[in-house]
Image (cartoon, rainbow, N blue to C red; front, side, top):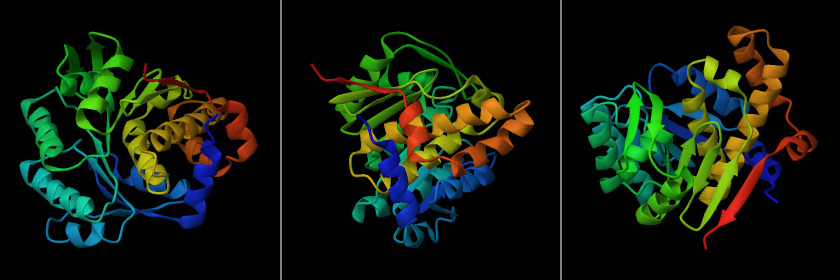
Length: 267
């Protein structure tokens, strides 16, 4: 049984600082969602300060949604600084596979930085894994093969935790694979839910050493908030407002009753 609420409670108690180098489209939402979960967000992007800033943080979240070559250089500086201080690094490979720049930048970061959690949708992770997959813009359009096996094999190959987001979220570190069924289709009706999910993962991994458990728990709790928000909203606009409120109202009983996480150990 995954005790996601216990990890969630640690975030509220410790208030970890989560350093974001994220995309400009969703930066405000990522900051707000991080704060709603009880962590403290900081959005520092300048190459001249990221090494210093990450030294103050408990986790680093990198998101290539609005990348430039200069921004990637700064991310690598921050990532290497995080590695030196043993601070977990979350990489959200937004749009990997859509353009050569995004794919090459993702592979470069994986080669130069120890990424603890690699996140993407089914198509993005498929491209990184080297299987046939299609990404249109930042949306997954298809994947050839068993997603769970692809996540497991990639996690094993990279020595990290791989997160594949979709109708069923898949989290694998090559040893244990988690299937997260929480969430609601309304979450796809607004821009930024994927980016915010990376922020939530960053908050959870900041207080939990088991990266796969942290990521699965984060997605489960985040998905529960989405379910509750959908029940109270009238459309995308009110859904977004209700989403933050739903996070604030989460307690142990609600999470225990709603959490839908299954595991599959390596055979």
